[in-house]
Amino acid sequence: MKYIKKILTIEKVKVRDIAKKFDTPTYCYSYNQLKKNINDFKKNFESFSPLICFAIKSNTNVNLIREIKKFGLGADVVSIGELMMALKAGINPKKIVFSGVGKTSKEIAYAIDKKILLINAESKSEIKEIDRIAKNKKKKVQIGIRLNPNTDANTLSQISTGKKENKFGVNEKTFLELVNYCMGSKNISLKCLSVHIGSQILDHKPYEKMLNVIDKIIVKTKHNFEFIDLGGGMGISYGDNNRKLNYTKYNIAIKKFLKKHSTKIIFEPGRSIVGNIGFLISKVIYIKENDEKDFVILDAAMNDLMRPALYGANHKTLTSIKTNRKSKKTYEFVGPICESTDKFASLKNFQKLKEKDIIVMCDVGAYGMSLSSNYNVRPKPAELLIEESKIRIIKKRQKHKDLM
Ligand code: PLP
Image (cartoon, rainbow, N blue to C red):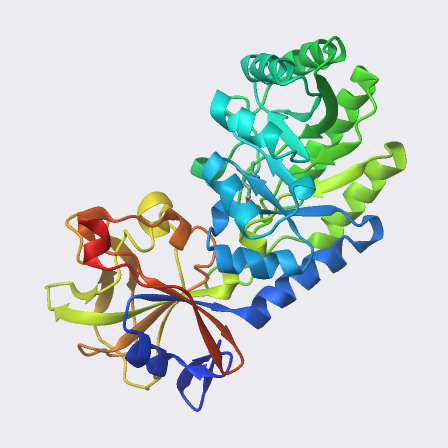
């Protein structure tokens, strides 16, 4: 996305034309950015050709997942619904891993029937349940055990998952016990050690620490893990600061690890694959003047894009046409929902706006639409996939009648 002669464009399509033709709020994804992200990701780790399982939770649009599948990616799922979605998109079950702390018996049975690559278990009770169901079905099931490496990912506390106070995975002591349990089971084949320490990680050092913890624990188990699943979490640059994870250093750390352990690496990236491909196009309904700041009331709200309300996340905010006129007052961009947290950004020196102007929030491809809801009986936005000047509707806008 860039300004061409002051007109904002996604690939070769003008944002204002999208708003006119498809109405607002609308999610748009750039196909060429998706392709670049996947190719860059593969290139970063090409020396050991990992299995890349796209984290479906970051974007659950079946048509987008279909495109991702064409690049050979598998899927990381965390519910039966996500598993069904990955299969519907045509992802090979042998490239699907199932994570999550609370898989129900029904979910486990379904995953076994679909013969997915791995169920990454997160507790002793879950492993016993997998064992029980597998025995009933007279099957041997491939599993991983998720380790909680007690590693601080240096990210927002709400998206940190690898510290001992977090609910995810099991600690070292339990991990060692569970390896022994699996060795004694006829219905379980322990194939993988998995971890995922958090999301939006910008510093490679937590990953290095995590690898050290895994290295030591593998030595203690004396077990030969066919797979080590390192999870996702690779951070991207939001806003203008241009900070992102140093892949070269992460790659070096993994290669060092692989010199000691012969295993296949799995990754579960979400945000780094789809984060920066997405844009939310909205329209200014009203500008409400106030003492210190003016409220810019958009037709997009927290139900469409939850990240700012949920984590205080910032998304770069742009106009569809650039002018040089600046507002003297701070603009607070808000939605129409009856919650004070329905607020996207508070920006000084922003371009002077008027009602009906088009506003774009950037980098919303991950955890944008997938976290959206129908709060306030608001239908969900349409989703478009843009490639050069081609626009494809990959999900229709919901209608009120769909919600009644
Ligand atoms: N794997 C697991 C188990 C997760 O919980 C998550 C996100 O929370 C991911 C992968 C994807 O993380 P990200 O989108 O930061 O790459």
